[in-house]
View 1 (tube, rainbow, N blue to C red):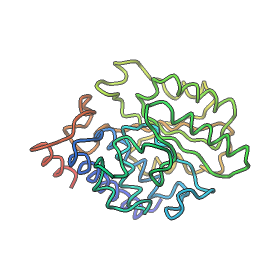
View 2: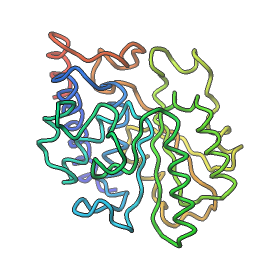
View 3: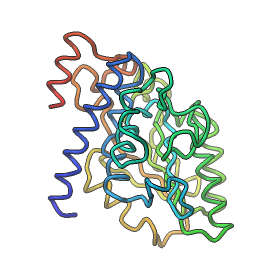
Length: 276
């Protein structure tokens, strides 16, 4: 990928991080750290045009389906969708305010936020929704891809592994999962709570292909999805993207308690300075 394009995407990611901070700090709502860890992934998928979509026609039949299953990261996708024209910029200012479109974890019903395929709500449901969409696409002879962004702590949910077994059985090669592997779930490190590693071999045992990448590297994100539409394998693909929770703000980076922290006062001033 040309260096100029990567430089543009890096600049966009810095802007998205600033937006996340300001949205949450303004109303004291949202999960800042969870949203910061997946910024490069979201920017690559949307601004990098890995996904097919049309902001003027969010329900375009040929669009790729994207499911953000890790609902605490919802704030991260709002600036991306607004910037691309899915909904007016003023909705960013109305985040979590009466009459506003955007809530801390997604919408109230499917379809009320343009660009959002499904209500995320409780963790563990996104992969099942994605597997269903992928199977429907195959049965209908459609060419769209389905991409699901998961949290690593979300992989404690049994429904994730039910969906994994289903997708492997049906050989859903039009389904891609991405795990935001920041290593922290709510208030502790995942490997202290309940060990997840080795994740790649777990997914392979369920009939998936699995690769591990640096989730903050555009080069590695794009390389992992280079053959998205013409994969030789007939298996679904899981990308385990190693990331830093709270990326960009020292108070939150790799801090288990950062999951519930929204910087304020002097913390907010320092965070703003670090994201410049």
